[in-house]
Image (cartoon, rainbow, N blue to C red):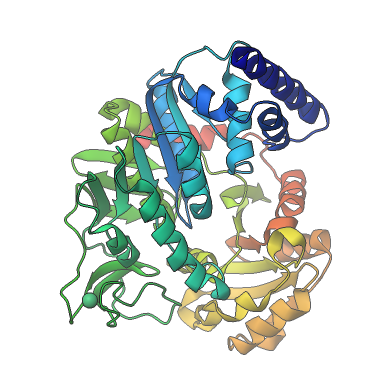
Length: 463
Ligand SMILES: [Zn+2]
């Protein structure tokens, strides 16, 4: 009886996957939703077909990039894998991912399932399946009103993993992982960085998790790597970074990232410290899975940035780099990456307040845009675009940037054509979510070289 319902659920799910494809939707949660209505245990039963390991990846920033990197490494190792898409990271979307790969009888076996999900969904997910590893990339509050909520979510995750057979892979540089200190019955692995040449000692950035979660005292930082991640200790109770199991060192960030993770040399076409953390988290996961060094190196080197994650276009021979921004932490990190580039540059901001962006754009006032006015960063012009181009221009003006070098062009196409026509060595284009794909299309159309493979290949052979 149950087997028939399971098969019906799979059949319905597969049918709706095909339909939603035909309608042009990709990662969809709807087929999973339908299948669960037919047979609520569908995810539970299909997850039981994973004979190797189920890995759950969560955290505020970087879970999509990290899980895509791990997926790439697992594919390198030729293992079979179920992996949900970033747009479908709640239970119905994860159910869809299982149904898509399963056979009609639901008996097909898999070596791994790699599931990306929001922090808030981890407890629910753990009710339906038994992951052997939970990776938490970091905890940041991406909106101001989320802080209390985040603390609550962490407590729920902790309760969900307690007394289970699950290993934790945690960011040792994130003070909020101290929440997991007392889960001594679980195996906890930690990844993090030793001192890097990009560390700062004082920062105006909005830093969450600065207070000791054990005693509430303000934490002291010896150094910051990125946002609230760094080397910290509590003057009151002695809470400090846990000992590392996976250590990132010799970090070099330029047009690509190079680092050592313990004794493995890693090269990635990505940029920025946030991605350096994603890399080390991905490498640590692969090591825990027992994947060999060559597959790890190749998987990371071959994994190209996706839309909005520092994707480079060439227009009239000059690079134009598209960056998705959605919160102050992300924007601060992207700006930090941009100012490390000493070229003469123009900046473009596309700010929308569509559903996908969050209606409230006040977050731009929490970001440290002030860095752009500093002369040594060589930012020649700023163009503000999108529906809220005026608000963005106002923010740039209040950052102390000269008004005569700010232009407002709410039409995306006009704005991009304008910024790329001005003198500079590189253009950095920041965009909120709902404007991103339009910007991308415009850039693609303006692009000199459609196939950017040769560049990627030469980068690979260097590494
Ligand atoms: Zn303390």
